[in-house]
Image (cartoon, rainbow, N blue to C red; front, top):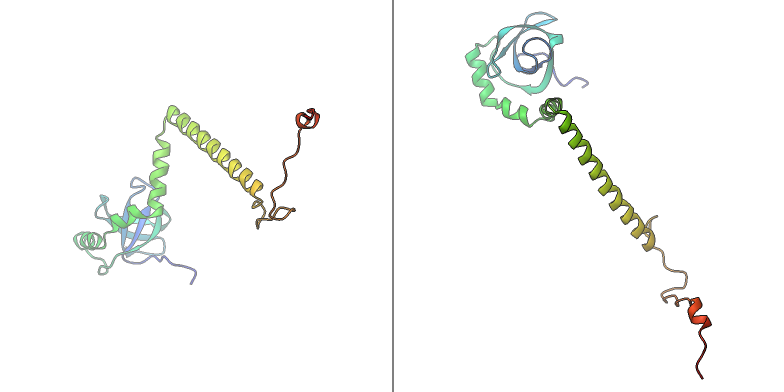
Length: 169
């Protein structure tokens, strides 16, 4: 089934254009192919008609009779807890973060850029340290490999100072 959200009575929608932009409404009646009757009982949107290209349909739907009054829509809205469900949705969180980002001052953007830079520096240093230790362990590219000499530890190499030192008799 390709479509999940239909224009139907009780469908909750987000207004994308006009004076009530960003507010939630419920579709009360379908007028024709391009217009619907909406009502926003908790978002202070008065009952009225709106074009479908001004709406974004959400996944939420509330149950109430065909062309119900505002009082009935408000009761169904509160019973379904639409406001709580909407505030927990990813869509609402994205909108809130966009609004918060738009309110940043120059100094706030500077602080954010510095914090990201510091975070990335710490992340890179940690990654390099882990990669270095994995490379030394032999676990960087898959299974840990045994040393060529078996389980025996390799003898320490003699340095120049030990080779040239005179032997006592």
